[in-house]
Amino acid sequence: MYRLLSAAAVPFTPILLAQRLKRGKEHRQRLPERRGESRIGRPDGPLIWLHGASVGELASVLPLIDRIRARGFGMLVTTGTVTSGGLAEQRLQRGVIHQFIPLDISRFVRRFLEHWRPDLALFVESELWPNLMIEASTRGIPMVLINARLSENSYQRWRRAPRSIADLLRRLDLCLAGTSSDALRLSDLGASNVVTTGNLKLDAPAPPAEPRALAELQNAINRRPVIAAASTHPGEEEAVIEAHARLRRNFPGLLTVIAPRHPERGPWIAEVAAGAGLSVTLRSRGELPEHATEIYVADTVGELGLIYRMAPVVFIGGSLIKHGGQNPIEAAKLGAAILHGPHVWNFAEIYSALDNVRGAERIESVDRLVAHLAAWLNDADARARVVAAANGVVENLSGALDRTLASLDPYLMQLQLHQRASHA
Image (cartoon, rainbow, N blue to C red; front, side, top):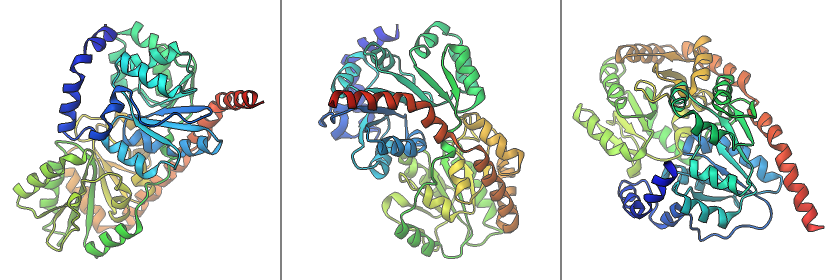
């Protein structure tokens, strides 16, 4: 049914892409990539294709891409969002090709696969697109799900269509799960070769910050007290803005930085803050916070490394609302004390490990958010203990990159042997 409906949707794809372009969710010059078309030729030799949905997935596999690339393989990386395209442009090595993933319509997928002819496909976390997987399987392309995760909610939904999910999962040659819970859920749904390798996000390097930009921001802030809210979603910015309004009475000069998960929401957040009577500045306009600025909206791509380096306390978004939480690891690595809401099932085991050793604190209301922010702004020693505990968790849980590479090694060796034989 899915394949029939997606085929019937072909005449409507120009309308869909036009609407997405209008909302800033597509690159005008790169729309053909969504139809499986490319202006870039396929490189010679074995080509490994890696696909991750968005910024978080791509950031987590950057070290893996570098390690595979170092072995002499061509790399094609696909993602699905404009923001991930920006990150790819900033941080992928020269020679690594980035394309936007085609819409999951058989005609477009076939065009994509016929052009690139990948020798190995690596899908990140939970990217299980039916047409993509079926067409790749038909061509005999080995498929591996890396850093695989499946939340309890997704697991329960897939159980309503057991034959469909089992058909997809059995097409995978290998499934490298991020946690033992993910491994159990994937196995139960039909994945046949499941190995728990750990979460690659724990091995990813801390996000960089451009030195000049960091110096400019630090100079603009000077010695003002700073708090940040990162990767926020609708419904959370209002809570952060309210917390700021209550805290500024006791912390003169307080600056709150809000980095929305979707940067295009920056102007709307600015309107909410202005409506609360607060002075607002947007980074997307090239502005630095002035002395009177109270809310600084960091509505740009790839600058969380900048924010985590200057804010001693960070609330990680996607957790006060029922989204499942965003990645806390980058903030921990850069020395920020972490606050989060109760809805963190996307990173359940990591948040549980952090909370168990007081490497992060869970808050469930604006009152608790205000209380913890005030306590940590007043007590640098308490913040330092939280950061140290979080770093210990990250160190203890690392090692996924080496385990993932070891699991992929048979496939990589096979490609290298085949290449040598063809040259001989």
